[in-house]
Image (tube, rainbow, N blue to C red; front, side, top):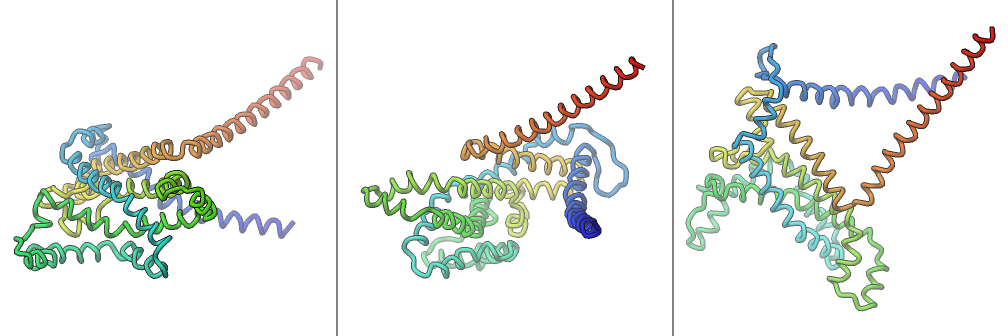
Length: 328
């Protein structure tokens, strides 16, 4: 009995620690974020006024916010277009390149390097005065290009940095998916005369849906949350040409002292990521998504039956007591 009590206390302590951490670092900040989004708090004064849905209305009406989302969309679209190249490179590593462990490390290295360090490195490469890229162009008698100060090309320059940083992790994910496919299936298809394209469409792609779903989710989340690269390299400039949604949110809070609007923007961002991930799951893995939905429905149905059983039992008990009182 004593050992059982000690185990129960130990288990309760182990469960209490993550529960407290979850509440302190996730639930409570999330609640405060939602609460402040309905106010005009400036981040300094202890008092604030509730403004209802005004901040959320501004999120969908202000042109500068939509411009920042347009910049985010460029990151997403170019990363999306790069996915076939990432898959092709993963296939090369899997099939043709010997000692691929070395190349895996090289490919994955940019993802490990700190984002600020990468931004500073590319700032030197893109420098209009003594940058490496303009130095190479000068060898071909081509004039200097303002990679980071021309509003027309600055976002493309920044997306290249993002591609260089995150392509490696996508290649490694695709490589893991390829290596999980049964090689006997590919060999059988090859014996039956299937071309490389047919193998890719009929065997590889159906077995890569989960990996593709993960990569697309990372693309969506990463594109909507781009911050460090434009912040370090351009500070959103020239003007607001390269300002992303996350950078705009931070500036709204700390430069313009409008924490209410910034919190509303953060809530919209969180909801957008959740909605997009759900839609993505419905499109790419509808059966898996329906399975999860059925499990949730089954859980609530089970709980509903339990409640009905308890209510029925209590009803019978009440009727029994009532009849006993009448008899007396």
